[in-house]
Length: 228
Image (cartoon, rainbow, N blue to C red; front, side):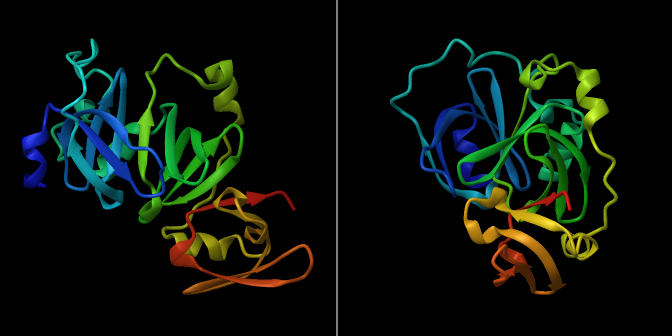
């Protein structure tokens, strides 16, 4: 990513796929497959594969937070390892984190497990969500003293499920065959139903009106397992 090194330390606009508004902030780090943008006191870790456009925000005035030390950046806590999505995710485990995949919802909660091509995320609102890593746009870890929804850490830790996982997203989908699931937080009515069959490269859902719906696994962004 040598092309963007000239923007390090400058205020930039970043347009991310799936969003309607650009993210603005200071470009503070460039890694193998991720960049870090500081917006006020917040650190956004953006997956490079989803960046549509980056440009110098020459009109922006300096903010009082621009010169703060990188105390909130997960990358600054890494032990000399190259900055990458994998290292950022590992450092975020156990921290209250916002992740954005698509649609109108970003998820707030905790990374429970990181597998080869997906992660298991616990949201106090949506429950356990399987997130296909190729669709993860960014994550934003909160300072360690912040907990969601004015809950105590002890209550959150007690409610977090112990999820049995398989190494790959496909294998995990096969594991939950026969369960009711919701795809992509059900932004469309055909994305919720009984997971009848998983056979790469597709899954088969049965809707409430007994319609059989087939979806390509490659395009599934998130999966939430519902109670039977």
